[in-house]
Length: 272
Ligand code: KIV
Image (cartoon, rainbow, N blue to C red; front, top):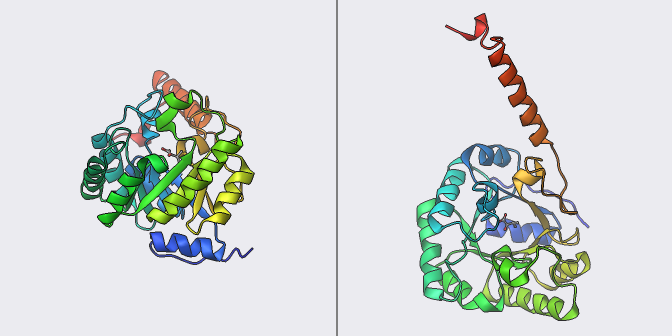
């Protein structure tokens, strides 16, 4: 397989399909704020997802359900102000698109208008296909999300691997094809067996970006705070930590507290 890497000055939905065609893997991370978005954009990330995982990571909620449209727009607009190269995808929050395609379109338009994001993502297959089609009529690029879909956590009951049984695997394949036919530009596959994920990636022409879905897909996504090791209580098998910022930051804070208490900080060079 070719590993050719083209230098995209600005990543678009078209660049992503070109990457799939060329066999170049797509890199995607979440971001929810200006400062970290700027760092990862400069670091060369292809896609930044303003995920509704902000509900967990930024706000401390147990699930992604409580985050609102306005809160997602606040996070997304902070990210958009930082980004020069990456494609910015904004998650549509729970309750902003399910069961009502007119509401879905108006929520998607509000996200695009008020955040400046480049595309939106929503969770589900056949159940939300009408919403997806309506959003696409407005020229808004849509990314799908199948497998473990955290907005349906109370239906699943657990965060374990999805589609291990034949029936669910078959529905996932059918849903992936439906999303492609409807016009989605890419698809996130979360926590499904690697073999099934590879089969999905091989059976559709749009890029499939995996999280906990093995390396037979077209790209990978992780939650930034997890891969930086800031969230140390979350330990799924698929997570590779590139830093241990939880310990680094704790150590820095302990040193700062000690320096303040001992009047070591500020010293003569650190004052006016
Ligand atoms: O909200 C999010 O962070 C996501 C990723 C896990 C794909 O949807």
